Length: 156
Image: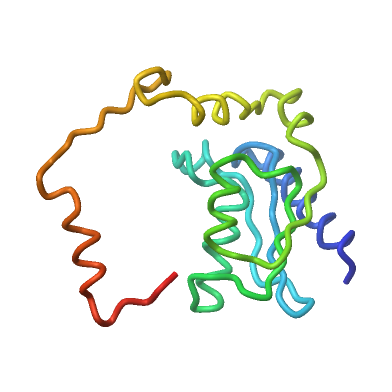
């Protein structure tokens, strides 16, 4: 199959997700060695899970299928340019490439505007719409110290 056919499959998943009432108009496919190993649809509203975006769902399924937490040598195809959350998930999953169809401006015109998140990230914590408060606890570094000392850790 070609890049266009894999991307077309992502678009088909997005449309079928909408028509089935699962969630927003987004679909994703993950391919390894020329074969689809996972698919995902946005099912935020049907699962009551705000993280259930198509890309995140596909990443979860691909990692399960491979028994790995990273997607080395995989390609992700998504019906729309990823949102900030999905972009973060993609970078943590580390596929070698991402192909997308619609731009984030196209999603914004359809009512899925994520530009406010990028704006929020740049603001000081106390100026965000959802205010972030840092509490300076004495043992705040304990998790990182434990990690540094843990001998059997898997680096990622």
